[in-house]
Image 1 (cartoon, rainbow, N blue to C red):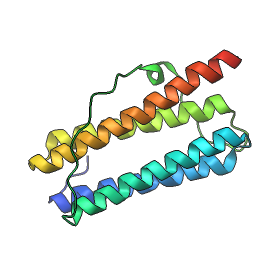
Image 2 (cartoon, helix red, strand yellow; image 1 turned 180 degrees about the horizontal axis):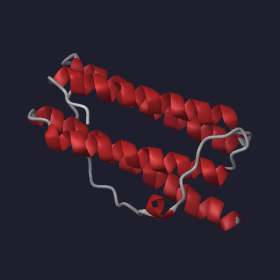
Image 3 (cartoon, helix red, strand yellow; image 1 turned 135 degrees about the horizontal axis):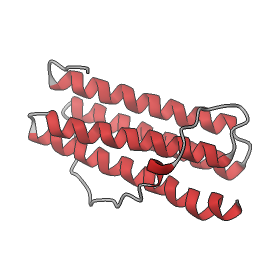
Image 4 (cartoon, rainbow, N blue to C red; image 1 turned 120 degrees about the vertical axis):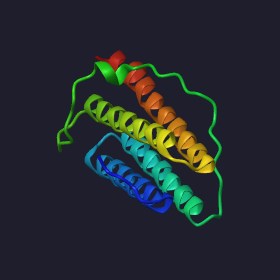
Length: 151
């Protein structure tokens, strides 16, 4: 388990994770041929970039983030097999991978919110956890409505 010495280290870690998420979605967008799927992954990369920028603003003292409403968890990703990115990955596999990644991000921010001593930072992480839950739900809905309907 990683330990942080101060709030700055926590924020630096979260910023790096958002950068990884952005790069992950850009990589997926570059692997797929279906234009709608490519666009979806590019939009999620932009969302992760916004999260990174927001965390940077918080770190620099220029912004506060409040948690938004709770997002229902369909728990679909709990029942899907693990998938590794590949050149020939189909749409369903890409969606499963995205769901798992968003679930991990949600857990990360939820855990960070639990362990920080700073009330404002706790609210920042709760807000980001809520946004990651929305992303996961969007992928679950897409999987359920489009991929499952086609198969």
